[in-house]
Image (cartoon, rainbow, N blue to C red):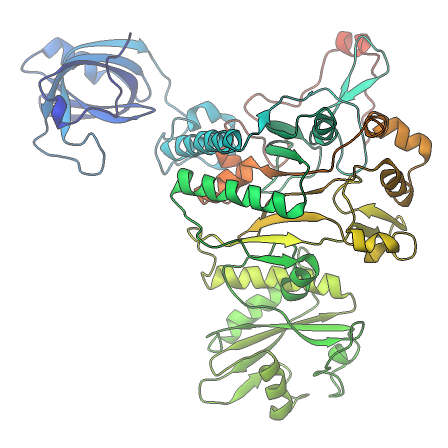
Length: 592
């Protein structure tokens, strides 16, 4: 063995022991006739002391080592006179009697420190160096602990881990597939799985009544901070269960993970809101419940109710179908500059609002508004009363013709206000089950319905009667777990009846031939006794990043892709040579 101990385990109790350590040189400090080397491995840092008075040749050798050299040192553990309370090994040091250089290193392109001087792109290019940094390592340790506790919990509940295929049939409904050409079946292609959905349902038909898998999935879609082209799911399915059984089971799993991986304990049941409630109150199907600022509707032509803004010669509100407000407590003292910044924020293309109206409830009881010339004080107070605003509060208002679009804009504004007011504490966790999603969503461009989740989701039994007459009214037996404004996972009760499944395919515009081509195996399996079943999947990357307090899931993945879907370390995707293309019967035709 190259080492008898790690660089993170020695303590005062080891004083007097002869030890052998190996690791990377973090730092070299020369002080007179003494040279101090900080030696680092995955477990920590230990100070090594070289004394010129005792061994001049050894000290001279130590003076020539550089950062990130890999060395082996033997010596005796001694108590430090100047203790470092910032690290666990800070009370001891190793008095070196021998050193061996195991591997030299060029000067790294960025510092291997907790707070590195390397930017994201540079660190992704040299990710193997970035992994040596403690923050990245800690994220991977946390990921390991979460995966371990997930397996332990599900095993205790009778789940069986089963691997499903990675090369599968392409089903292009939904997100785009990554496709893989087959050399042996020329002109035909596999796809990489977006999820193991059909396979886990087939496992239920096969009698594996409690299945799980920590599985790689792939989607060829545009990337964001919480998305990667390849990602990992905690994928689960159960037979002979209803929605309530699934929610209870996996609420228990999340509580278990948070307690054992981070020490966070949820004592109460997770709250639940319907999808319609979430959209009405927060404009999002994954609302951040750590703070308030719930929506207050001031005008809703489609749904009726009070109209507190029309009839004052303010054409913006008069001509709008939907007007909505939020109340920011204690912000009435915001300056004109701050309010102008918020106006510019909502006008950004990624938000899309045309402007912002504000009402300031001053501490002295007066009211100031950006629409003072249209609304008298009594009218503004009616709006303030509706928004439950008091002295010192700020009311922000958006409007438009499309209520769903305006709600989305206000959701973005609400989250921005939460950030600016520091209400989104990363150490606070607010879970929420979102239930009763619509079964379908209408696509205006295609003039057709799409499944909001996937075509195997069961409708609420009481809503089946509306499948033909009013599909948009039908609710799904679907559920998501949201936390802090992030969808951690979701799933549904599945259709297990062939007749109802065929009905779903028809409503989604599938011909019988197309349904058979894409899902024929599952449909055939249903003919042989499919048990009622339900399931869900959690994004492991999202769960880890949530617990680690990260802004991007990239930082909890060992080798992530960048925002363009590229691996800059391996420099891929890349072209393949002509011989491979010919063997696969492929021709590259790059569009301008």
